[in-house]
Length: 431
Image (cartoon, rainbow, N blue to C red):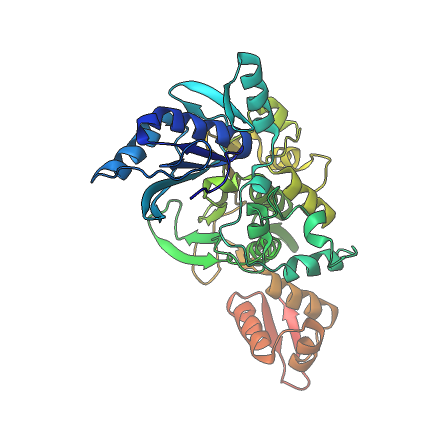
C-alpha cells in the first residue's frame, strides 16, 4: 500500500536505523511549519514496508527525541497497522523556534532538510521574536463561539459582519484552525483567572478566592475590574469641622496594570495573570517578563513592544487600551518604579494601599472610618436631601430595599450618620 508523498510536513523513513535523520526532519519541519509528522516503516516513495517492533522501540524513540531535539517537545507516538504491517507515526507541534537536532539547525524545503547558515538562523530567531505566538498555536478545542466578543464590538459602536468576523479578527491560524487567541476570546474556555484575598501582609491566611475565568477574556477583565473597584473603599477623616476623603488605592493605576497583564502576558506558557489582595497592597502578576527587544528604561518610559500584537489590536478597537503608552508612566507617577518587580519570567506590579484596614467592622483608628462605594452613594443622597426615605433611596440608587437598610445600619454603626426624629417627620444627619 502507498500512503502518499513526502511534503514540508511529512517525512518517511524505512526503519528506525534512520532515527537520527528522522529527528533532524522533525526539527526541520518544526522550524518551517511548527508541525511535522514522521513515519517509520515507509519508503521514501510512500510504499509501506513495515517496521520491526520490540518491547522498547517506542520508548527508545521517545527518549531520543527528548535528548536530541531542543527545545524539548512532547511528541505523539503511535503504533499503527497498515496492510497488517507495523508502522510508527510520530507527530510533533511547537512554537518555540528555532529547534535543533543534535546541536544543528535545519529548515524544511519541500521534502528536504537543509542546514541553516548563521545568517539564516539569525533571521529565523528575529522572525520568531516578532511573531504573534497566540495566532499560531491551535486552540485545544475547535468548537468555539464568540457571541460575547461580538457583543463587545457592537457595544463599542463597531459593525460586526458575521461572515468575515473571524477572519478580520485573526481568530484562525494559517491552517484554518481556531488559534489560542480565539480560545481566550471564546464564550467558554478553561482559562482560570483568579482574584485571591489574604488576611494579612503575606499568603499565610487565605480569606477568599474568586474565579472569573472560563469565559471571554474581555468579560473576565471587566469582572475583575468591577470586583476590585467594589473594594476600593473611601477613608473619611472627620475632625476640626472638616471632612476629608481618601481612596484605598488609585483605581486608574490598577486598571492599567491589570489590562497590561492580560494583554501582554505569554499565554502560551499556561500561566494566566492573577490578582492577589493583601491587607496593605494589591499585586498583579503576569507571565513572560519583558520582551527581548525592550529594556527596563524603555519600559518605564512607556515604550510599547506588544507581546500579543493582534490581541492588543482587538482591545484597542474595543477601547480598552491606547497606543500612547501612558499606563506605565501613570503607575510610576503614583507609586514609583519600585511598583514593578521585573523578573526573567514574570512581571509583578505592586499597588500599595493608602491606609490599612484594622477591624472587620470597617473602623480604623482615631477618627477614621472606611466607607465603600455603595455607602458613599447613600451619603451623597442624604447630603442632598436629609429627609429622603428608604423608598426614595431604593428608587434613586437602584439598590434593593434590603441592601439600602443594610447600608444605613452599617453607616449608623460606624457613626457616620444618625436618625433624628421619627420615621415620618424625622431626618438624616451626617455626623
